[in-house]
Length: 127
Image (cartoon, rainbow, N blue to C red; front, top):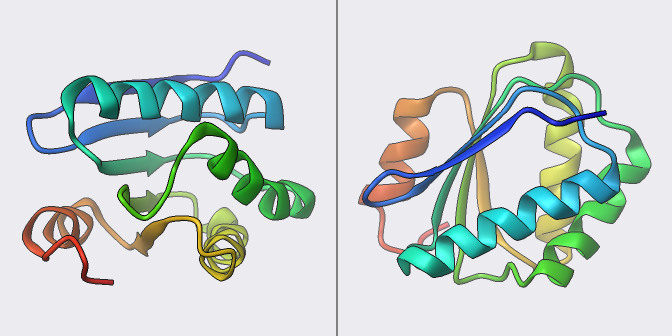
């Protein structure tokens, strides 16, 4: 499957728009591209706007390993906004699993405005 993901630098954050689910290999490729974009612009704020549907449980558990593998750490701040209600519980499970692994500094938000407020206005050590 070809994943529809756009990655753009938006002055103070890297904007990621995901339209389709990805298998783990594609997931890793996308996050490598995101990390490269962050490093190119010396910007470690990431806004992920997602329209994906169901996430397999094993993908929730393995995504933390992939984040570690591609170099994501607490330096990166990731604000996720998911528009598909049917995937919200999967995303919550994923965020809990990743936080427990201590890999990244990220939060799930109900809309872009709240996500950007946390991402851009809060001190970088805030959770």
